[in-house]
Length: 319
Image (cartoon, rainbow, N blue to C red):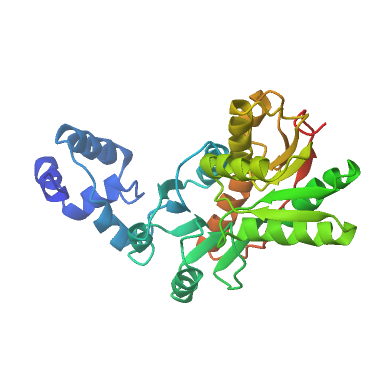
């Protein structure tokens, strides 16, 4: 592999001069810099990122941790993070799994944005205690090296229940998400509080934020009750789409036999027939704000927690 020693030898200059040129240092002239870069290209020189990181103490890369990559939810969020980081000259890598968490202590990244309920909070705190900077999107942690950018799950769930109450609903089925997931638990607490306030009966049907779990939940709901219409609040749109799939195969009419509200306002929901009623928020802005906060932390600046607000989007699935 070609190194800076090879470039220095061919250019007839010192190793330090090559280093200055390749790192755009003002310590060399523009003419020297361009000549050395041309030789580097000719020799197919590839920078040793690990060595550069050790020397500069930074990578200008932020790790984004997700539980998985399934579904269409993450695209808009990641686009917001990417564009937000570009403003400050940073890039991102998207990670999943415990082994990739080693990027943080090994300083292969400058900081991390976490939307991964499998990433243990105690590990996040451990990294923060060591001086690493984190932005969390899915849990409440108080630490000077951690900033929280959370969804207004309480407000969104309250809006959904208010819509159900306005239709004189007698019973509501709540299709929940992962038991360890912050968003799912916050939506559950807010929904139960409002339903109890209005004295409306409800039943919890476990899900895991995936379409198949929504399909399975629908099977249980439709087999357990003969009353129509059935009122359902699915804690995300992926599971609501699973309800559509089951209803379509079993002659149940969404919007007539079933009143359904989702959460996330996925783009796919607008193409469903009838259109899915859902709780909306800007995933793009969520990502942009997270990017801004992690860069502020990395640069040693103060980063205040923020809440991403929600709204109700009407649809024919909930007439």
